[in-house]
Length: 97
Image (cartoon, rainbow, N blue to C red; front, side):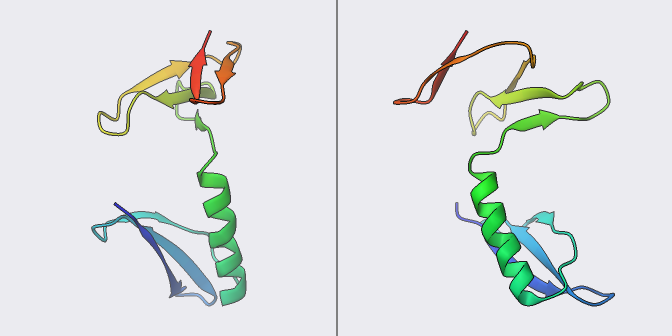
């Protein structure tokens, strides 16, 4: 299910980017960009970062722990403490302690 980005006018000037999922539901709204060119650059940067970015829990009680999803479908998560080391099998993307 592919999502998409929309560039919209910000009410106080400039532009914002909205990220929507494949059904058109809002997923995220960006910071304000001064120009459309800056908004497009922000989308490009977001695409690059989001594909490889870790999930770090900075919520109350999260203590900055990294969360690794078990599966997309189940939305189940496992908390991994920042002091835990992993070996990565890069061929299959499998993590082990």
